[in-house]
Image 1 (cartoon, rainbow, N blue to C red):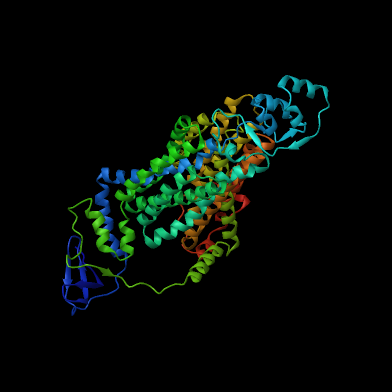
Image 2 (cartoon, rainbow, N blue to C red):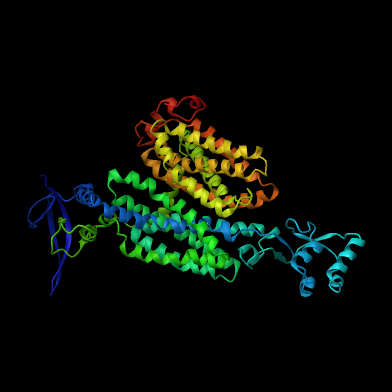
Length: 595
């Protein structure tokens, strides 16, 4: 068996003194020999050799199915809470029927229907942002029947905007809308409830990405879990609207932290043959979360009780923080070999790590310190590298647009229950039921067709479905629901395709930046989605779905301009891209080329 040698600086401690000895290790698979300092050996073996032992040990651990599936459950189950907090606004930000509050009539103990019938321009039907400017002080001196005779015999005065509102609710303050009057001119504030968590997810992706790389995947997960546990109840008990928005923002940050950190741990401990399957079903917690959230919302009618109901179970994340392992790969890259092997030995005691019992610490020489401003400059340099050639520029612009449109359509459809006049409990449960198989569909289509054809087809199906809603009668709610769910199914499925296609469109030197920035742009779609639903849906119920349908068809056409990447070698540098034949460049001629 081959022996790999590497020199380390090992700090040895005893009762009397601490001195540094230069040891040189000679590796075999199950043992390690300590060679005297006088022996001359190579000191800079490739770092990949260190991973060989960890890789082989992790392969052995993956044979213990109970262990890898336990890690999978611990890593993926926090997605339930992410789904809860993303979609809960569908229930506690719902808009009940509303009209102007008339203090003079309220003080005389008129019923809500009586006040509404006298003051609202729409009467007992619909909602209103204005009131008829009667002399309500005078009307308050009459009984209801006399007031009706008075308004019937006098010309109707002008209307004036509401200063206070009343709501038709079975339970008072069942919605954040009635809690803080988020209607009419304050309607954008209602959209802020959903966009705040989307902005938090956008920020959290960058923040916890840095924390996970610097301080460890598990440390990042623990910090995100603590943020979850604190901010969930804080949102439930928020006395003011803006404190509630801040709490939602941090819930979004925590959601990104838990998701990304746990996903990284899973991919770094899973074997190659299990990584693809586990990665595909990792997001299955989201549709499960959508379906169970509908049941929870039925039990807890007020928004504060509902927020607490989805927040208290997050205490279970303490179990995840205790049992979820740190990534041995990350520990090894940080020079923490003993801790890396300890993670493995905690699962399989029979593994004998290639370490000496006398070693207390391994010190790895760190690279030169890089100031923060240089790191930021390097990040911008990598970003601008995506626009360094005309071909790269065309590719990244198409990717940005398709990612943005896919995310915008996904969240618009998720939040659009009221515009479709659907029961929001049934709508969300069916959305989760439809989304679950959408993770499997791309794998089936990709086994037969290429990335470009699959992505364009799914975009086209989603777009045509949403545009077709425009031609369905508003009274046919069942047909609208079926067609909308078909569009959501195709839109959910397209994400897996565009991620794969994007990763293959760019050289290795730009690939990570292309995927990372595309994910960031897609978050902008989730930020704008609630404003599209609330503000555009206010003018006509079909505008949000029709807009997304048109954009999805546009995305299908854009996807056809891209080159097919299936069964083609990945490019490593921009020079490889420049040398590629013309048929592998973005062009209108690619619309009929699928090979």
